[in-house]
Length: 302
Image (cartoon, rainbow, N blue to C red; front, side):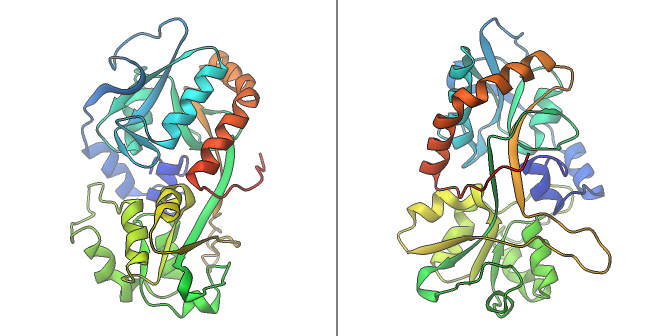
């Protein structure tokens, strides 16, 4: 949840709006930042060193970013830095990625946030380096062939594994299944209250619920679950949702396909020009990482 702006905000805000709950979450949680990960370590307050690319990263945002540098966005950042002729320097926090812009980038502790949505108004955004969307995850032996979230095959299901505050939650509401699913969904976070705190379902849990038969379908942003679908010992099917989310009653449609880009501070135009110039050189390496991760790639539209 970063807002209706980056992948974190989109997930938290169920589309393109951040409500009072999101604001309360951001105001409530302290951030303890530290240095760890691959590349050259840096202290959060370290000034930008010549030849360094300071990357804002979370230790607990698998599969995007992890303390040991195995997150796919960590690896993409390394490829980008190399294409720029720089050294990747990771400035990390033990808080979820929803806090990267507010507590690290805006405080000049680092300079780059990976995986923001094109159009994120809080940051200056690069050209997109990939496009993907929300997916339906089902067991292969169920032979679910639906490509639309409102397909009768999906409408007929009763148990959905989703992340809170996301378009997936809105889909379940639109299908009229939210109340029926409430007890199950809260069981995924041990019935913790979502009020004024960041409570979320990990991507690997969403996939294991489907693989184990506890959920009939998982609805998620593809990068959150692709790694776990690929490595599941139970054969699974991951299908990109073809249609956007029509909320009805004159409310705005929520897109389910997104361009992913790199964010920097709005006044850091020189760095952004350098990043955009390097992205073409870095593209083969970036696409190799995304393909290895199992993320379905769509044609960028920006």
